[in-house]
Length: 204
Ligand SMILES: [Zn+2]
Image (cartoon, rainbow, N blue to C red; front, top):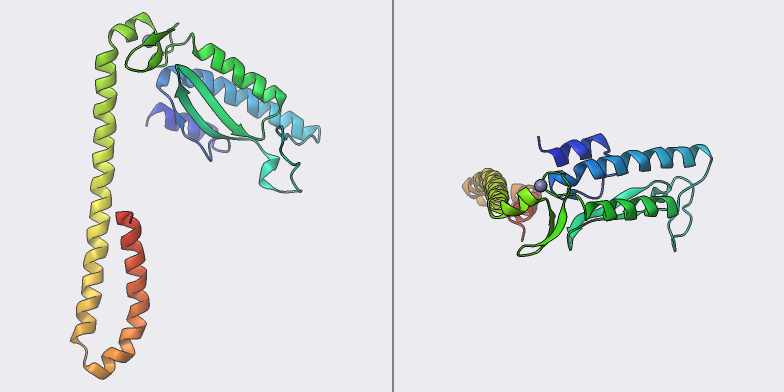
């Protein structure tokens, strides 16, 4: 299991709406951020304080806004950017601090890093910077492999549904005209459902 997935599993409520789309070296920063945010949110709740960000209406009782979650986590211009819902000043301070730390932390391995000019701007240590082309290539290969595998599964599902669909059609065609009309309308509901599923799978 990859380390991003481990972090998401550790704080599922914080990552319900966002994936930590950064490399492994920054995950300890995110882990610490999550731990401190969780602690803060819990204490605020104990004090009966609902955390509400600037410009946000206080939530009605039981509404989704009564808790904090990330909306996007990514690398931008060499920094770790964390966007969220329901952040107060304290959480915003933490996120700013973590972003500032990220400009001195190698995104790949977590050692002390600097902003470097590769094809894009990246924060890397000396060693990852000198090896950057290989690291980049390895990432590209593993992403490509994952993509192909997902695509393969998608295709398999599509052909299974497709074959079921063809079986139903061929059964309808074998019926005599009167029965076909009666049974056909019933089967049309099933067919509609198949078509919906197929359309979803091929993403059209
Ligand atoms: Zn490094």
